[in-house]
Every structure is written in structure tokens, then in C-alpha cells.
Length: 167
Image 1 (cartoon, helix red, strand yellow):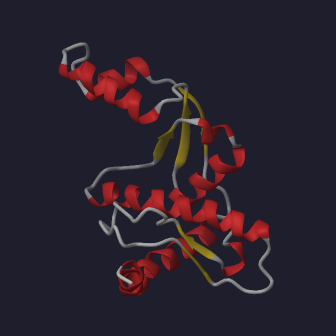
Image 2 (image 1 turned 45 degrees about the vertical axis):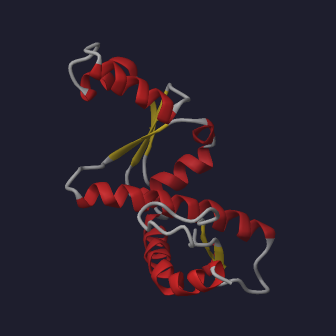
């Protein structure tokens, strides 16, 4: 956990949430001569996970409970990825049967709007089945520290990103 102090900012196409900044750029921070391709790869996975946690924290900030997060798509086939997300989120990661996350969710919302289901909760109960739940593991504390470092990097680098984007 923590890629031996290497952190990746996954802003390869700018950023939308929580920083609405098209000038944001991807970056590796903390790179040293001892880091290998494996460190870089793991830092990318951790950085993407931290970016997803940013969105989760927005929901938590609105008072939503998030003891379990549902996940779908090809990435959740990886036990490593599921465990990493559970640890970074500090919440169980529930794998569901649907492989189409956004499109399937939009279809369910359309069904609610059309009266097929009486509520979003009813649509989810009828159409989404949890296959398994991955619980956070012991490395959660290391990821919490890494996330706090990650959160400090965007504000520190935003002026540099703007300079880079406008050169």
C-alpha cells in the first residue's frame, strides 16, 4: 500500500469532480530512483481509486451513509482491484450482476420515470443483485494516509497546471 511514497494524480483529461478544472494534469509525485514499473502501475491504480473516493466523499458530505459501495463492470472481476477499492473507500465493495453501470442505472431511472417502479430503491431491489461483498482489510490505515496526501496535491499543483495549459 502506498507505492513506497509514490502518488499518481489521474487528471489525464482535466478533472470534473471534485475539481472542475479542464487544466488539471496527470502527475506522478514522489518518484525516486528506487521506484520500478510495478510501483508506477500500483500508483496509477491507487490514484484512480483515490479519485473515485473523492466522489464518494462528496456524497458522504451530503449526509449519505456509505457502509457499502456497489460496483460493476470489467474491473470488478479483479480481486486485487475490489480489495483496493474497499480499502481506499473504507467500506465494503459489493459486486453486482450487471456489467453496465451507468447505462443500466440510466435505464432504471427511466423505468422509475415511466412508472415501471415506484422509486429508485424499488428499481434497484428488483433489478440489481449483489453477488459478493469485499470488506476493507488491514491496509486501510495506509490508504487513509495516502488519500490525505493525494487530497493535498491538487490545490498545491493547480497553479502549475494552469501555467502548463496556457503555454
